[in-house]
Image (tube, rainbow, N blue to C red):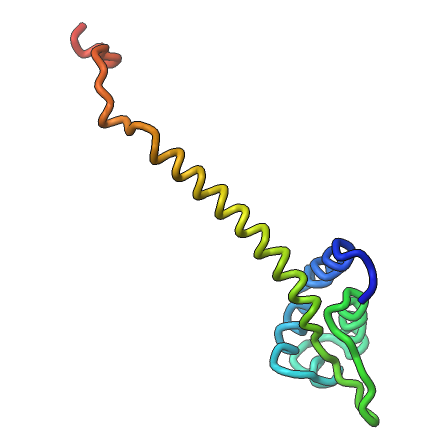
Length: 125
């Protein structure tokens, strides 16, 4: 698929915003399938499934190739890898930030170990 990686990423995430397209991608992880195979479990028209596949194709997530009379749909691992790399990179950054926050909080004195001479409850008044 052509284009800047960020554009590719945007198209791939947008394509997966629909639950039917996510399900199609999940089913294609098992193996290539025809449009008829992919349409079977849905209560939508073959034309609607074809439109979903067109969106997935334009995003670079799937390709179709001609095998005699069949046109199996194939999941493109590279596109999923691009998405996974992006998610992993940002997850690592978030985890690193949380670890630093936890370290900073652990270094703070806890409220039950601090000693104070002033009574703020007014119990002695």
